[in-house]
Image (cartoon, rainbow, N blue to C red; front, side):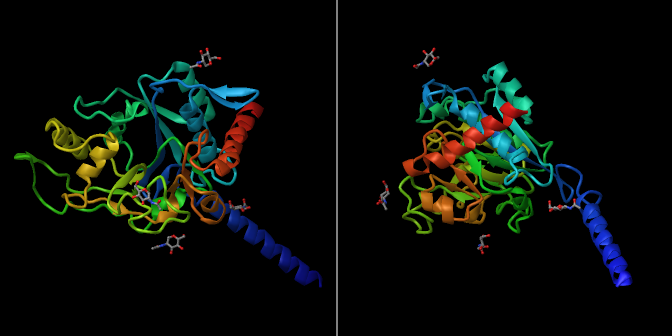
Length: 327
Ligand SMILES: *[C@@H]1O[C@H](CO)[C@@H](O)[C@H](O)[C@H]1NC(C)=O
Ligand SMILES: *[C@@H]1O[C@H](CO)[C@@H](O)[C@H](O)[C@H]1NC(C)=O
Ligand SMILES: *[C@@H]1O[C@H](CO)[C@@H](O)[C@H](O)[C@H]1NC(C)=O
Ligand SMILES: *[C@@H]1O[C@H](CO)[C@@H](O)[C@H](O)[C@H]1NC(C)=O
């Protein structure tokens, strides 16, 4: 009996040690997946118009996008059910117009901030005022200090860690389909390889658990620039600049998303690739939230499309406030 006990405790001790070792020593150094330097990233600019949103009798917000950045920071770095298990950094790219006190707050919340100067092109005028500084988002491709970026629009809410996306089978750099690109009679050099994965743009009136193509989607070929895995590349940024030199050469009414769809079109030299639809859904129904199994939602926490999801999103806001107020 005694011997069995001894052997059992030895085994338990061994299992615990092995488990501790596997949790600590054998883990990748922080921010690396394989040998790749990967980050979570989002983008914040100051609102182009201020509206007061009443959140409760105690609280209101004039900049719900800033609050959204704080929620995302809380979710990626701290919330037990959604935080990164691989110590992947959350980088918030902030437009130069963002107020100092907001930048200080986001740093205290744990995010790494990198400031971007404005990037805009006269003839590309997003149709919506709140997208005034959206073209600056194209600077993502200049961030070559990183190998791979999971970019999330700031109005994203996670339901679980997204770390596994960096090991998704679809993540493989590709060579452009053509070796030369002529754009309106101009030769535009292509990069040796590129990587852009994402999800097709949904329609605002999509059904729950959307799967109908094309009814639920804009079409199957328009990427939504609010959720992307991409490899930064200076060649691609230069490619954007070359294309943008040709005034009115495409419809720029959705800003960065127009440019990205133009450059990574399935009809062009560098088609973007689809990633599993379960990673993200925009404008979720309650059914999508409770039974859809989605890893993240692209929705305005302060003004969701479907009123019955309001409490779900507000709850994340209050959890964030509670967390930071208590530490
Ligand atoms: C190792 O990590 C797992 C998952 O995070 C955890 O459940 C387990 O308790 C950890 N084991 C030890 C010994 O720290
Ligand atoms: C919003 O609230 C602030 C502070 O209470 C106030 O100064 C400002 O005038 C309000 N703005 C609008 C557009 O109502
Ligand atoms: C959704 O909107 C599109 C475009 O406005 C329309 O063609 C389509 O019929 C609508 N779908 C449903 C299910 O209402
Ligand atoms: C997408 O992901 C879901 C959930 O993880 C999985 O059940 C499904 O098989 C995946 N689809 C494809 C095409 O890989």
